[in-house]
Length: 128
Image (cartoon, rainbow, N blue to C red; front, side, top):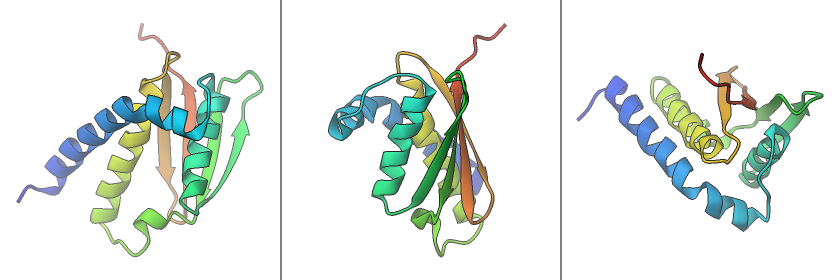
């Protein structure tokens, strides 16, 4: 049996790679098209709403940021810490992988606020 830290690390890596590899197929299955952060947010909204969750989105004026509020997150319902935190980390890495698979790379972060998740999508900035 491996510990919590190693589970987060390996599970997160596997999830991110899964997102990277499956993004094109998911995009086709949804009939969506790639684009800026608005389209990336719409992609996630459709997926999360398809799970029966409530999701709303607000976009920046120049397509520079999209914020999704995700309520009623069924995947972690009834799961206590530390398993909830590990699962959320891996779930976030899965969708971060889809953002990194796009032609115009995007960064995805989320904040767990207990009864809702706040997802933020932004264009990936060059290091420097």
